[in-house]
Every structure is written in C-alpha cells, then in structure tokens.
Image (cartoon, rainbow, N blue to C red; front, side, top):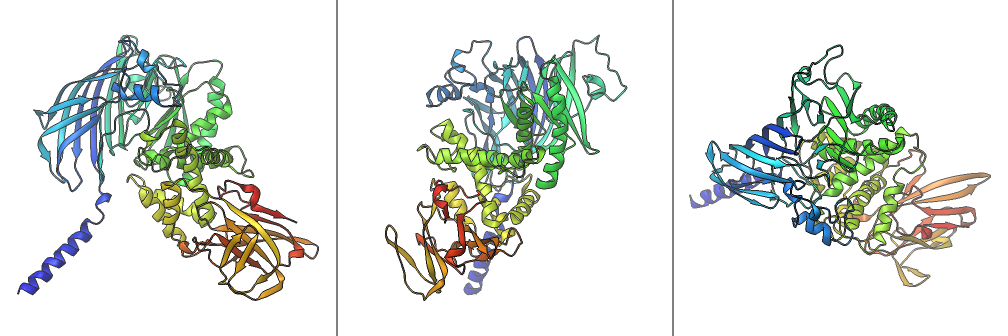
Length: 639
C-alpha cells in the first residue's frame, strides 16, 4: 500500500510539473475606461480612470504598480540626472529638464484610488505608483480600480509634451497612469529614464474633451465622427461646432498595449484607403512648404502597407494614423508620431520605419527594456527591405547601413552585449547601435545561416505563432529552428549574450589537396599547417581558412573558375557541426556543394576542392555580404 501511494504521489508530481512547465505562456489582461478633460490654455487635464485587471498568472498578487511617466519631466528626476551624467547625452534632453519652470514640468497627482470600490493605500515613488492591495488578487481572478487624477503636460522635450519644435501643441504619449506589466519574470515597474516600454494587452475606451478648434489623431477608432467633424465625418456630411466651446472625442481600441494621441488647431486631415478593410489617416500641419511632400508620401505609404502585409503578416486593425508631432519618430499601437518638416525620402523613410514597428513591437509586445533589439533591430531590418522595394533598389544590399553601424560599434571599444537592459547601457551610442544596427544584423545573418527562402517563411511563421503573445528571444529562435531543421541556440548565445566578433580569413591556397574528409588542421605558426591524414591529390586545390576571432559561423565559399572558355561559379557551404545540419541550396541552381562540418573548437579548416588551381580566378568568403565579418579584406583570394 505504501509503495502504491508513493507511485501515485510521484505520478502527481510529474504530471503537475508537466502542466505547469509552460508557465510563461499566460499573460495578463486589462480594460481601460478613461474620461479626460483638457485645458489647452494651461496644458493641464483631469482624468477619471476605470481599470479591470485580470490576473491570469498562477500567482496571488498583493501589490500592483502603475507608470507615471510625466513625473520624469521634473528637475532632479531620474531621467534628468541620467541625461546630465551619461557621457553622450541625447541632445533633445541634455540639461533641459533641470531648466523647466513650474508651469513647464510634467506631473501626475493621484487624487484617489479605489480597489473594488474601497480606498486603497498607495505611494508615489518617482515615475512609479506603488499600490498595496486591500485584498490579494488571486490567481485567475480580476480586480477593478477606479482612479481620479490631475496631470500637467510637460514642455515638449522627449516624446511627450506641448509646443514641439515644429509647433505641434500637444503630443500625448506615455500620458496616463498605466498599469505595469507582470509576467513570468514578475513585475516590471521600471523607472522612466527615457528608453523603452512594456505593456499589458487590453482594450481602451477613451473620451477626451478639448477645445473645439483642435483636431485629434491617435490610437483606436473614433466612435463619434458626426459629432466632432475635423475630417472624420462622412463625405457630404457637415458638422456645425460654432455654438460649442469644447467637444468630446470618443476612441476605442481593442487588443493593444498602449494608447497615444496628439492635438493641434492647425492640423490638416487626409484619409486614404489601402483596401476595403484598412484606412490610413494622415494628420499634419497646414504648412505650404511641406503639404505637397505629405500628399506625395501617402501613395508610398499605401504601397508599403500592401507589401508589408504580404511579406510579414496581415495588419489586424481597421485603421492606422500617421501624425505630425513628437521629436523624431515614435511608434504606438495603430498610430505613430513623427516630425514632419522633411524632404520626400526622409518622410517616407521615417513613416516606413514607424509603421514597421506595428509588426515588431505593437503586435508582438515583447519586453523592450530587456530585448530592445527584438523591437528596433527587427524593425530596422524589415524597413530596409520595404524601402528597397518602394524605391526599386533591390539590386543593392539593403542592409548596408545597418552592417556599417554594427561594424563601427564592434571596433569602437564601447560595445556591450545586446542582453544588457536598455536603461543600463553605459552610453547612448552603445545602446543605439546594439538595438538598431546589431539587432538588424542578427536577422541578416540568420538569413545567411538558414537561407533566404527558409528565413522568409520563418518570419511569417513567427508572426502567425506569436503576435499578441509577448515573445522572447527563445520563442523567436525556436521558430527559426523548426522551419530550418537546424540547431541555432549557439548563434543566439554568441550574438546576443557576448560581444564576440567574426573574422574569417583565407590564409593559404595550395596546389593539390587531401582526400580525407576527417583531416584535422592545426596552425603551428603563421603559414604552416599540418593535416593529420589524407592522401595528396595533385589535381585539386587546398584552401586553408582560419577563424581569427572568437565567434564561429558557417561559411559560403564561392569559387570563380574557368571551365574551357566559360567562367563558372561554385559555392562550397561549410556548416558548423553544432548546427546539426546545413542550409538548403538558396539559389536552387545545383552549384552548392556541402562540405564536411567545421568543429567550432578547430581554428583552421582545410577545404579540399576538385578544381585545379590553375583554373581558379577568385575565391571569396560570403560575397553576399550577409556575414558581419569585421575584416573583409582577408575574405578574398585572387590569382
């Protein structure tokens, strides 16, 4: 009997462990209702917020936390001090927060907060509101929070604020008390120092009361166009606002993790259809110097949406809004704020980049603070592809700028691992190049490792499997592994968690070769290589390739040679043994020959070719340029 009980207990433990093994797949859920009354004269607003928070975790929650982003725009805040002490300060910020006057600072003042109808204790700690609950939110349960607050919009410095450099009155981003995210790693109540974000998937129902002369654009679908006008009304319909001082705009957005908006009395509002299911709104200043550029960019934006959806996945909402505002370009669900005084190429470029963020952040919801490269890097890679398509530049290497940015970082001495938390990089330079450039190269090299066709299918698979689900780096690399049939954890670990670099060199080319596929080559001294075994075939050619830096990579070695009077190309693919396989023939022309694996412990590889040395004109490692080799000069041998 005791034995049987032990078996049952053991069985229970094993099966329970199996059930809970995927504990990181749950995610929290939230519903916001907000009523906002804006006083445009003093840049202040009052707010009432009702939140229903669903605890889908396996944990009982005794506290909750809110972001109070506007509190960062006060002298001696963490953002202020960080901006003044980091060695390469963002010029948009620098010491400007320290100089803000009383009516220019930002703040959120929490007047009251109730949990399930009862007052609850809270404390404001910088940009975080810490709430100690009256009663825990049990696993699988929900709680309702009702908040009243007063806020002041800061003078526009970084992303949010009034009176931007281009004269936009209100750029309302990171503007409301926002519940922090809780996931399998616990709470993410990060202070706001100016970097990245992470939010809870949910629905927003937002009413904004504002001066009738202001046009609003933002996240969500406007629910009352016939009441507000400003270009939202139906064709032929006219909205009379002459007897009103203020009007209320009512927006709803489903399954998003943030809500942003902007307002100005001088906005123009254009509406363009992508197809019967998607409408684009363009909201920008009535400026004679740039109106034609904005009009011209609309056609390119439609083309971009069509191309992106075919290549990276369907856009799931009914509209998207491009708004002039902010201080550069910043992405939000269903909308972006961008500066608008640009030439045509620059305007299209920033629109494409911010729109692409819809796929690689707004629809994924990854933790940007931990994995900024999954946001900025993936967006940079994809927007490079989109711009090449829009401007018919497919013949050029579209990621040249990203690779140059990474190589500059890798040789600068300032590089930090991509796994560094976004807020804790030592320099803005290291953060920017790691998240944008090195993040884009992460994808560019995966394209090289698994092959372009497999890579493109995997990117669509990633969208299909992980949108709306907070994927992390392991989730992404597993999609690539499943689609390619290769083991790729080594690549993620090297590229994300270290600053190891890639440098392969053709160090010698000799007449004749070894016939043994198992020969082990050891570098004794410069130019001296010994093979452990193998019979010499004087008709072939031996190429010695050395890994000079620490990061291993599979190689494509392309040989240009004469066959009679014709010039031929042959690709010799050298897989890494730790890949447990090799990529498919990308060109599907039969010219790829898969060679014996390269063991990552071995610094030198002996490549034995059947081609006579006298016929070889050129040997090159990775002429596709997709491998970020820090010294390409030693990648080529020419007769």
